[in-house]
Length: 330
Image 1: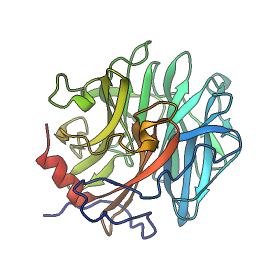
Image 2: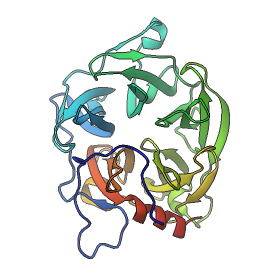
Image 3: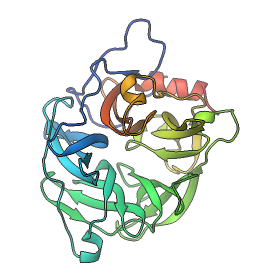
């Protein structure tokens, strides 16, 4: 029985068929990178960004590190999901508490449509990195809510609907150092203000059984609801003699208890191998942050940061991808 995406049709999803002779279940767009590092005048690099369908076209929130090397997030729009017009000024948030609105730094956004609005989560500086949360209806006005967690935390990724009546988010708590470790946890809230009921999802894999994810892991795009469970694409890190190497794999989580892992890839799905993934401000990084899906065809388009410098695009078919995860699971 083929795996189905539970969701909306997206007939204009960016897409490129798998190259002839390719044996991988995730393949790259031949015209990568889709967003260059200098797409706006002030940017040193544009990467680790999030996109969603919006009004028949596409919108997104982009990490644009400036030429002064400050980290902030910018809204952008596209007709086709490939050619982007990114605002030249970062997002300005409105909100009820000036303390929360105070900006230290912002990076690595995700965008999740739930019910009637788009929620943005990002790594937000508040005496250390935590998970900032905001919502927008139009990608013009953004209302910032309370930070989800205490520092230190990264990779806060929401689920696209309530589960058991509660909003859900996976995140990667860490320590005051440069995240020398990191496991994925699931948290819940009734009101988008107070988060609790924390549950461990999965840990790194020690030894060389699956070394690409032996140092730290973190959720990537918004989990995709499928007939087999939640499809969660995530990054894993290998600590090599030449520094960290970021690749990505995927897991299938239980649909009603997403902290239960049903399957999880032992091999990576995509690792830094192309020049734009291996050479840049931070070499050897493939960091997935967003995925578009078409429930009619099962197509998945994955946006990922490359070498902390540019943004790439990759593709998969849900039935082939889930079958691979199940057949190559830890």
